[in-house]
Length: 255
Image (cartoon, rainbow, N blue to C red):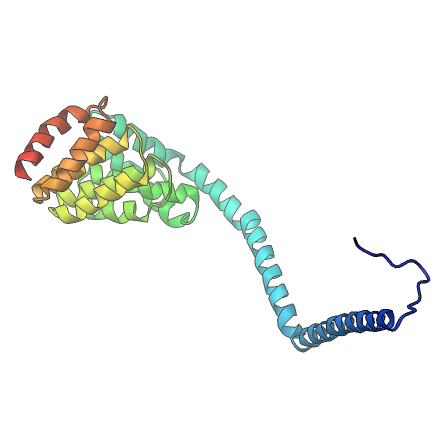
């Protein structure tokens, strides 16, 4: 059982006096250590106060700069870009749905018309904004559609994002451009990147099939077989599944 000292307690025996002295000594040592630690901290702060104030000031300036940039540069720039891109995007969408004069519409989307910016202007002038980023994607796809494959690769490669559809479509389109340039190894790499970005019923089976066919043509039968099996097992209700069944047999025979 613990023993508590009552107020006014005075040691009577020699042992009690020794305990009290020891406790007093220990307490004194603790306070002495704390005082020494505090003194060392104060001395360090005093010695390095210029450095400390400099770091604090730098952080404050950085935070303030970021806030000011967002408020007075980035947000107005993005708002202006969103307003300016309307006509270029309109031409791009018309070109995608057109049955005739597609190339003409894609060129209008790329280069602009009647004093309005095209996608190339938007991507350049509003670089760093979401609108400028999407303009890179649209410009790349426009170039791909008019068979300018190097330009398509350039702009699609500048597009960045984690959108579950646009991101894999951009990577896969780069693969398509490399196929047209007769560079299947490069195409194969980008098809695999497109597959890895996200899993969905639209882009995943599409690029699994393209990766599988490309692998087959490169003599990578085992890898091709795995792509085709994945389509037939995971995406059996998609249009690609029927083609995958046929290619799967070819790949298995070549393994």
